[in-house]
Image (tube, rainbow, N blue to C red):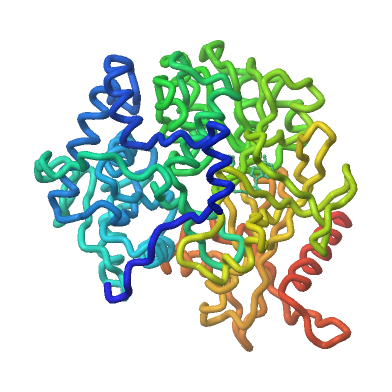
Length: 548
Ligand code: OOB
């Protein structure tokens, strides 16, 4: 690429960094260091179960080392970015640990992402390689790879495929070059990977997380969640999402020497037999799935008695839904309110029932600074709703390569504006009440209204469009697009959706509902902001539904 490589940094001020080290949060641990240590300490214990594959820690390490050496053998160098898209497959963990071992920087795409998103991640991160599974949930990623390479401004030099690689490099046949493996561990303060933001405005932003900060977040999560070497953790959500990755997620479980079981689907039909067979103890779900599981558990022949803790997060679990979940499932419920940018809140396992059912938890760290402020940035009175701002030992200080987003998303003194509207109880527990951003939280997937509007505006029959979230009994929120057609046009929703799919966007961003309108009302001033317009359309639509 012609552009100079954008450095990967996460600049905590020196005094805070010193404080986080002195407090024992940042211990200088690194991902390759953890892998090396666990491969010895837990050598014969089962690390990963996926389909027919069962790998011990020693085997996981051997696979990771082979991949690391092979990728360096292709010509990649430590620090290079690698976009990975492997779904919930065993190869996912071999590749993630392999990249860490090689000092390469994973960029975590979800399996649901398509060309538009993957090309954006590759550009923003200046990625040199793309590693994907041949096929997952019926989609062929080799086709995506071909389209990716044909895009402008893509610096991807290497495509590596798990499975039948066609014209690309096969993951299994990477060149052996063990001599190239780094002999020292990276700086613990350096960036270990780039995670993807939920995307509150426009396309997703890239989130640089360091070894020190991320490892602290899941090590401390392990303690809060009671994860140890006997834990058997089911990854039912997409493995590349921050929640099943590190809250405490698979990385927490690997850290503790436990077993990570991958489910190819979150459906009870697939997950329940796995829970019974592997004696799963812990897992995380988004609220709609938790409700589905609660229903399915009432009639299942499968033995779910090994379950210890069910975490629910990613979107608001209402009090009523929480009651239904605990009534139907033989588990302890834990609410998790987190964000890929950092801050994670948990209800504690010994919190009283009112707190577990009615709050979204409190922060991991005593040094997570939480502010609840009004429109002017002033703290609200305790118990009053306000915008949640936070900074702390594992919350980022800036996004990668995105100065406009940094200017919007961080205060001058380094607080991250989460965009969430919360109430904080005297105990420190937070209750999520809404959000300031115009994004849609569709069953835990965050979708930027602006991004979907931009996509739809490119449709030849669309004159204007506003995309809003509508409350939905099952999904929490669904995507509704209000479309003004171009004159004389009558766009049909299934055709618009097919057209969007053809543009290569993740299916979860396709509107669930289209409403064709003649015009958008303008305010008295004659001009209206997108935000106000969306708010009014949403309110009118909900009111009209209530009348029916
Ligand atoms: C998790 O991470 P992201 O980055 O996909 O989304 C973060 C946003 C939050 O700012 C909030 O708006 C929403 O998702 N959210 C919740 C919630 N958990 C997340 N809203 C209400 N109640 C909850 N329990 O979603 C994520 C990352 C780590 C752990 C868990 C979730």
